[in-house]
Length: 324
Image (tube, rainbow, N blue to C red; front, side, top):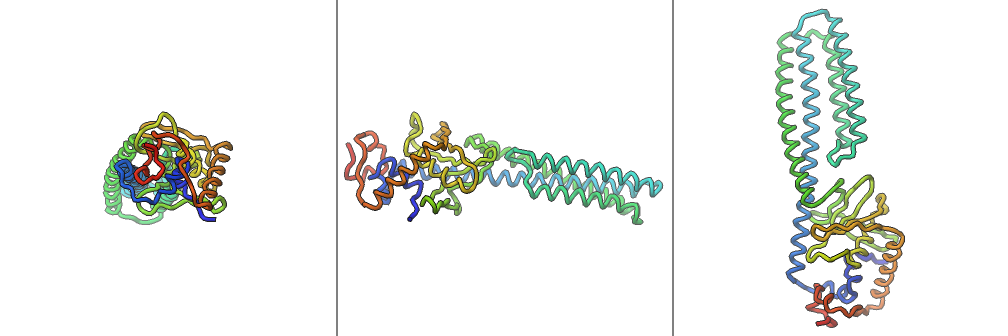
């Protein structure tokens, strides 16, 4: 069973004859503008992902540099200061316990965070490694004969690390702010899990139902996968039937990868939440069956008597049954 693409299904639901003429070389301004608009959208979405990754990377540098700077500053201070070696050992052990408590708190907050800019899993390993290194270093100081010169050097390095941490914090904030502005302009919420344009986007496939497709992008919101389809051109009063069926196809394609209960259709600034319920699922299978029957017969015709619909069709120039 050959796979039907969600894009072709949308054309079939709009008008079977328009679908049959899909390979015609048509360069109408709305089509060209639509492609350019989608290219810009893909670039902006990729920009959000890049900036959030950079913000996260700089945030990790802040954590690592700050922790190591604190460790070196404490080590240097205890080396330079005079006093009983066992007293220093006890103080350092208490500090080590305090840092372990901070590490546990940081790990818990990272694991339960739901923000789009939350700390990723690999950041937890960095935090843990940095804190464990500091604990070992602090406890090792009393057992080695470091000179006061080495203590001053440790404090100097700590100062440089704090400068680096401050710079990393600034860069992290700049990248996060850039990503936030792009999110607001595109009304994007949640984590961007997939972008269907630009580069080499993966085509989603469902062998069981003979379906394939590439949504404009996919969000992960509250543990659910949400396909988003953005339509350019005129803004209708409500979501169009063919677009709803196309979005339903994307929902079906995503079901094997996670929980899917709805999708989003966007027309300009208007957003429509489309529930993927049993009724829409049944409608999707019905239209897929109709399309397969049309493919098998090889004969299709215009399925409406609406001149306005023909005027809005991108294939009207080459359509033999268009209504004038």
